[in-house]
Amino acid sequence: MSKSEPLLKIENLTKTYGSLRALDDVSLDIAKGEFVTLLGPSGSGKTTLLNIIAGGMEPTSGTVHLAGKDITRMPARHRGIGMVFQNFALMPHLTVFDNLAFPLQIRKVPRAEIRDRVEEVLELVRLPQVQDRKPKQMSGGQQQRIAIARALIYRPPLILMDEPLGALDKKLRQQMQLEIKRIHDGLNLSMIYVTHDQEEALVMSDRICLMGSGRIREAASPARIYSAPRSEFCADFFGATNIFKGNPDRSAAGTGLSHPHFGLIRADNLPEVPAGTELGWMVRPERLRLLSRDETADNMLAGRVSDIILSGPITQLIVDVGDGHQFNIACLTSEEVASLREHEEIRFGWSRHATIVFDGSAP
Amino acid sequence: MESDLNSWRWGHRLFLVLIGIIYLFLALPSLLVIPMSFGGSGALSFPPTSFSLDLYRQFFNSPVWTGSLLVSIRVAAATAVIATVIGSLAAYGLVRGRFPGQRLAGFILLSPIMLPAIVVGLGIYFYFSHLRLTGTALGLIMAHSVLTVPYVIVTVSSGLKQLDARVELAAEMMGASPLRIFTRVVMPQIRQSLIGAALFAFLISFDEVIIAWLISGNNAATLPVVMYSSLKVEVAPVIAAAATMLSAASILICAIAGLVQRKRAMDEL
Image 1 (cartoon, each protein chain N blue to C red):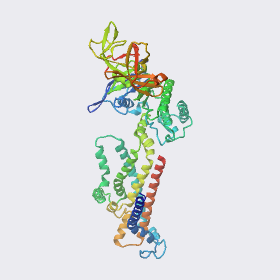
Image 2 (image 1 turned 30 degrees about the vertical axis):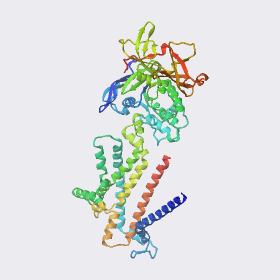
Image 3 (image 1 turned 90 degrees about the vertical axis):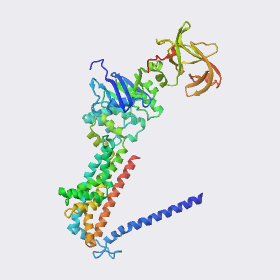
Image 4 (image 1 turned 180 degrees about the vertical axis):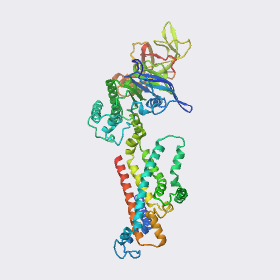
């Protein structure tokens, strides 16, 4: 394997069940040390893709190479890949020590070394002194740490994680996200992480593959996929957004999109498309700001507050701008925002850089 | 309201009493044998006029009775081992596997339960006559294994269905072979089901009289077969002792099976 060659190379994978295409011509390279998230709604194909990599199912067509070797039809037990499951899948009849020793016994590691490695990996997941406990005697978060330790202990080149934090409550989930990230960074591991939680994907990944209807719709770094999604599907998946249509307009007044109700919406980076093509555009709720009486912005609109939703540090305003259009504005919670009343008239605006135009080529 | 509840309570109590009476009516004849077995060695009588262990002495001094008891124990033990091995492997394949004809295979494996014992017995009898297996303990063990495998499959399958298949997938991903997964991951988790199934198979074989009577002949007659034969000739009082011991063994095995199940329930808490 040369240095530039990816650790995992997925080429043209397709999986069909009768007429249903669970996976539709998916190709993806994963570099050594990379943390890749497969993100998508249920039925998007992310679990099917993970199962094919794991060896739990065979694709209808296409290949999977691990470290240059074709593993497409290799039994799971010969692949040497690690896996962490949502429900932990620890062996209930064995103690933590025996659970962790299990993969090492298969590899005929000497007893003394097994003991050392169990201790070492328990340090790593910050759970020393639980060796003699059975899984049922531990909390969900602790069990998941043991499940992660079990995947780490035989040092696989690649670890798959199937919604590993799905069974935990929110606070613990946030804590474990950082823990997994820390372990990943410390060991220079390659990880494929499946989740349907966009926040989790943003926090943890080097790269996010957004999947939908059996295909990878977009693959990019969290910053890029969040701030410059190329499709409405992708923009929509990352949370409440203000998505509209418009026609490209390169008049003297400035480049942007003309909208029948809002007029010209200024935007950077208009894609080259034939005149008259309708394009989608959006602006993230947190990029909108309330304008005081004489403040200006590249784009400005006025409307009436129809709803005020306080959800902690962020307060959401739903604003009717007329003609049936609504904007969702995310403000930091403050006295100023708290003093707003429903039906109150407000002005808001955003910078031209914040207007995201979908290039029309992405599905 | 309260009177409703009261009358419901009384109705419930009456119901329990009724059940008790029916139960006693059904069980009493069998239970009468027990005190009778401790009576004298003369004729069977109830209530017994004296207490003695004469009938038990007679039983253990007769090579016919003791021989049949040993045959019964040997056949039942061998049946339990064979049926548990075959039945649990079949259950694993039926619960976890995916292969064409799976439902049909399950149906065929369970069919000995659905057919009347006399039909199964006759079929095996004609077949074994050709193979010269009638009148041998081996033949009886094989026949009883066919009869008990379905019970093992049902018991072990219900245990397997409680297991999380992802634990086995996890073991496979760690590099475990199918044999290691079965012996180290699956079997320890269904230990109680396996013990229960083996006890059940032992008990069915130990009590079974129809197939045993057809297959075993005189050379390999089991305890129930000897009891049955001796009843046809004359009612020897010693049969009360045999019946009591047979019942005691059955109840003991049921009690063990019950304890094993209870331990499993406790473990799950």
